[in-house]
Length: 277
Image (cartoon, rainbow, N blue to C red):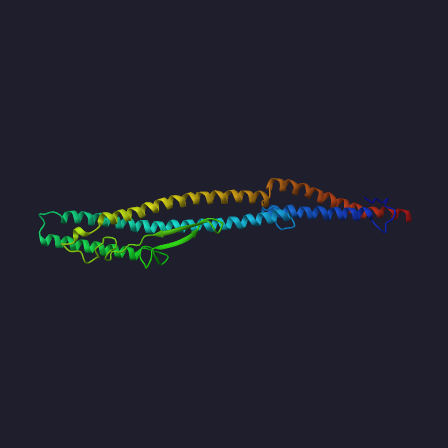
């Protein structure tokens, strides 16, 4: 470091050094003040190039997992809509089973059996309506040319997918109850495959329950992963406010002393004016 006795006033070494120190301190103080203002330790890549890159990668991962979490919620909603429909159909099938058993009573006359058949036809038409009206985002889930089947991405990787599918419900001939809706008569009531239909529907409900449990586990796992990644990113990106305040206070004091020393260094050459008196 250069020093001067002060006799050479054409170049004020002391003032230049005080000015340089003041600039350095002011620049460092500005960095810490910015960190206090933003709450971030890294406000640009220049602050910590590797930390900036790592934190941005973590941010991308968190946003991907957040989108996957939304997808898990949508899948749960689809299952919820289908499950509600299946449960209603199961209740109707139970009622049809009751009517079928009642019609097998030898004490029933023809009119009573015809009334039971008409009621069963009405219940089967209701099953058809339920299947047609069970939709999610405008897409029918339980009717169509083929069974509903689609994939949901439930993780950050493209391979983290879950296929959601449902068996369609039809009351046409050879469908859920073997006999077509509207074709049930007092003669063929006993031909209705109600027990098989109930087994089919209850199996689908059981599958939905198992998949919903799986989705709930995925939801909890993704939420935990997001929290842990956020914590790791925070350790890299976020400022320690207490530490930054201590450093800012220290630099603020040094800024004042540097300013005072610059003023003193600028006035020092004036002492030599006395030689000309």
